[in-house]
Length: 244
Ligand SMILES: Nc1ncnc2c1ncn2[C@@H]1O[C@H](COP(=O)(O)OP(=O)(O)OP(=O)(O)O)[C@@H](O)[C@H]1O
Image 1 (cartoon, helix red, strand yellow):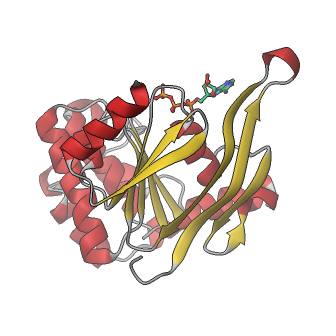
Image 2 (cartoon, helix red, strand yellow):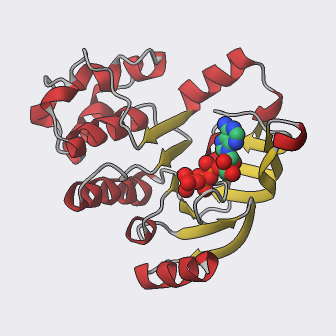
């Protein structure tokens, strides 16, 4: 493990939706630890619990039982207010659908999303991210005036501006063409290599997973396999086995 320091830990997570006959158990005792500066991809068949796991780890969804530690703090016991503050100050999010505010320019979306920490972020770090993501000449554009790839790069810049302890990404390349997807994945990879950014990404795409340091495979709400230094072919082979 790089540095041996875990920034996110899940202990025996169980997550059920609904109750009685209609109850669905999405996670059945999931434990995993995520080291600083490590890029983890989460894969598995449809319905295996990938998004639920990511949402529980990121405090976007409550758990039925088990613990989630972010920077040593058990977030499952936090009040809604403290959890919101922790998410804003210490976590970053990138979603498939970009989630930019349509009336704001790229720069405003990166800076003015209600995060005090982002507004205070130093100019040098803002410039570093904007230049690395190739957004310098797009800063005055609104989302409708940008391609999907550019919009996702704005979303990545916004997520990284607060130097989050963990960047969570849910299918970040799901709406992108292959070239734009490659750019976004390449940037996530370099943020891990250059700044020890921790990234946890759900994906269906073995090519996207091959940018990670390891892949955790879920099936039926459990972690059933792990692959280190994944190649595209090795990820394909494991997925074929899981999908039967
Ligand atoms: N809000 C919800 N209410 C009820 N059941 C849910 C809810 N969210 C997820 N589930 C169920 O939990 C299980 C796991 O869903 P989840 O979305 O985590 O899987 P996934 O692996 O991300 O799937 P996909 O690859 O199709 O996005 C599924 O059976 C799903 O139907």
